[in-house]
Amino acid sequence: MLLASTTDVAHWRSPFCAGVDRALDTCGFGRVELPWDTFQVLQRDRDHFTKRGFDAFRQALAAELARRDVVGDVLVIADSTIDYLNDASRSADAAVCRALRARGMVPRVLSEGGSGFCARGHAGHDFCELASGVLRGADGARWRGATWVVIGGWNDERCGLAAASRGIERLRALKRHV
Image (tube, rainbow, N blue to C red; front, side, top):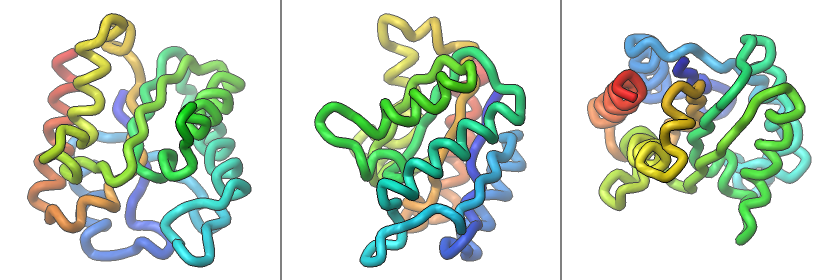
């Protein structure tokens, strides 16, 4: 199963994000609906959560996936929505994992600030490359049948909608061929 967060939400509403959401729909991604307006963000940086906002986000993500009856292995691929609060020990990734495990999921989180469906592709850090790295790893076979959950797409605006749409298609193709 392929799932993705809605991008045309809250203060990120834009024609570009609406286009990303249409491309996700066209490629068959299920939608993860979260109450973005309720998550506390930094006053100086409205794109990232406070610790309280992040805790509400991770709990809401776990609840939404449980509501959709997601169980078993879950691969979460995200941008700075998660990575912003990571430290050297990847504590934000671990916090999301704890929330998902509490709902019966077996998660792995790949978060990379600045990444997206095409963003950071030049450096090999777009969502498709992050997922490919897991699949090439020693435990890659474990993630072949996992539910994939993508959180992001906002960073792709500088790449353009056509490039973002191609990145969405690449990720879908990677999932289908695993």
